[in-house]
Image 1 (tube, rainbow, N blue to C red):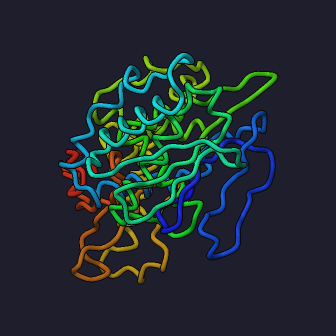
Image 2: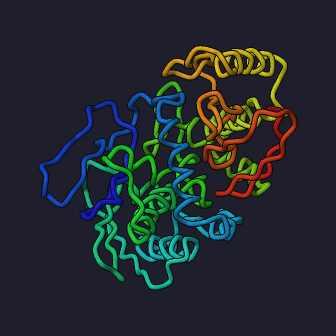
Length: 343
């Protein structure tokens, strides 16, 4: 779903065909063709970009603004029955997305046409924005809310002027923002897979959607699992929650497990040996285990000064830097999370 660039955005539906790209200046951005029954990618291939997107969202919106999205879009407000008028129902759901994202001066005009991608929005100056949905949604109305959650988020980010470089990362930003701000549970619920068929909306994997939903749930004490109609969506959410909780158990946080604390103590000892007075100059790379989220650096008093450890905030992934001196309570300056640390 491309978008935060002038020109437009698309909603991707899972596809087994290669990514489609268009010529520069065509007014449309590249995305995946629409097709059912293609293989669904799983796991966390975009995790670094997802975490960067959460961090960018907090920085651009502020903690106070993020807190205004504490309530997700309720299922009843985006319900779409087969007996509902197609166009009136789509406009109603689009208005609900505008209301949820707090875009009161934006008007979404929704139409349907035959096309290869799932949805598209043209990002102009506003206040009117034209959204096109694939004709398949005429008979798959339960997923219209998911497509509109993504497309209206494109408008939201466009107005914020919040973008990531490159179409792919922009689409991941859009999926992440829609999910973290309370509408993206619809995108995960649109994921369905069995032995004979599969469907997935969005650029994140199901587990990545679950991870972002879990991060949101931990902040707002919300359980989106009760809204899922897709059992596969619930499974992906529980997998994402496991990883989200793992973020809160990384050293130097006091909630870290025994193995993590033991490794942290070893890395801290090596770092202290290298930065001790009289020791040889430390190498260019900080001494630490591969793959750990923390790193040790000397304080501002020189290369042999007191050590500090930096690590990502488990809520917003902002890097936090605190002294290495035992028990420390730190507060993230971006999301205001208070962290109990044992450095």
